[in-house]
Length: 423
Ligand code: 5AD
Ligand code: SF4
Image (tube, rainbow, N blue to C red; front, top):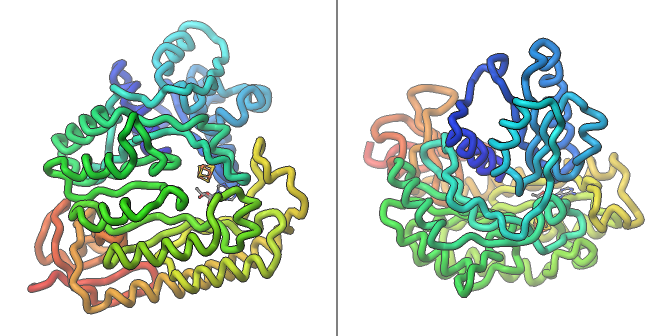
């Protein structure tokens, strides 16, 4: 989401004639786009800002801007603690950046704009995309789910969806510019709703766009996943057979305290349906350990659910208290050492599951899109399967963006090794 927002911001500034520089010492203005979802993300920003402060000491005219969710979260506090920051802009204020930048260049005044909007979806702007293969396309913004651990509804505001016509125009343009893949983005991507067009309808429309080879989306909420969505995924050749299916926790008591709105059984039932309806699907997840009140028994239930589903991959987090959220007021916060111990055990189990799922692919021939040269050797390609796994294989043939059949020869941890079939 932040990569997409940064591309959007770069697009807004380029339209006004600004250029990006690879050399930070040369910059007239430095912007940092921030995430507030966990304190670890915020700590990284604070440390980066320390570097910018040093730059400002030697170049006092440079403008420093903090954009995005942390700006929304910390607002005036930032100006008090870090007076070298000139501009603080929340996630709904990026359009104002050129005007603000202009004013700021003329007069020395700090500017804070963190007004959230019920309407801003950044239509009519074209992000400045760099990657060349996959275009991130934001289809909805904000979140109305209010999971009790999550700051996003407070920093990103209310859910709003983009006009499907504009989304399709943007994708057609990206394809014209050489992109072959698209990832539809939203905090709650499958809550998408514009007039009577729901997420599954949009997915179908996008999948029919000529020249689109791979279509993905992230992040869905399990309560909004239904059979129709899974069937559309299974039927459409260019919709990738991979799904992010965030569990968060395995015990009903904790799920309820998290306000996740589904039960362990519902989640298990749908995970089973996903594997049954979409052959060869890759399922990734998000899991939080050490949510306030989580007992060892609750944690064991998370491990049990993992054991049943055997996710292909997982993003795992220690619970981190976030301002404004309901969970911050809960009793029984978990000691750091306990969180760390649970996270270690969870990661260990997930490693086994990832290896298990990857070993299932050994000796199979899978379609791999060549995405880049392998970092380890210029003689190897690095590509992704439909199910979102990276494969390294000898460059016997093919070019970047080609989809080629690769026989998987080995699975080591998260990486697969392969050989182009027929070579
Ligand atoms: N603490 C830990 N993890 C969190 N996430 C969101 N908020 C928190 C928090 N307060 C995780 C969730 C979410 C992912 C994007 O970040 O797992 O799905
Ligand atoms: Fe946060 Fe829950 Fe909304 Fe996801 S669904 S952005 S975890 S509040």
